[in-house]
Length: 122
Image (cartoon, rainbow, N blue to C red; front, side, top):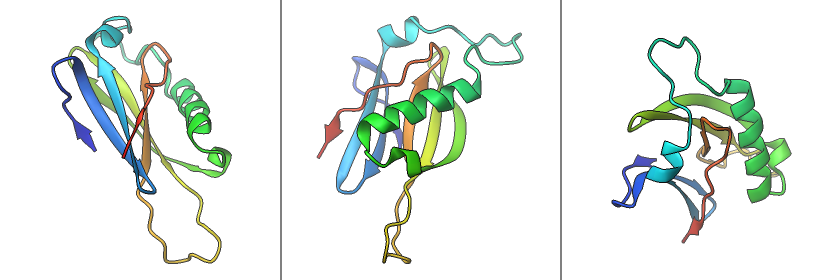
């Protein structure tokens, strides 16, 4: 799910839903504009609960039923000299599909409180 992007990106993260891949590219310029989480600071610049609110809002721009998705893991990921949140969601079970499998979908949130836009790749 995590990977290093081409040279114009500091990192590119991917998530999948259905038969589509969503790539979350983070540019060096985007990273440079975010606050640093310094080692002497006990808490990150963006509180986790605020990051979850931002991630849920972005999820709603991607999927009409986003309000029914469940929150999963919240992780802090180092990217160069900055940190980003990786917030995991699980879609609701489809009716009549008790044995269906779906992988978690991750949304990336920068320390300045912005969600990373994810163009769809097929």
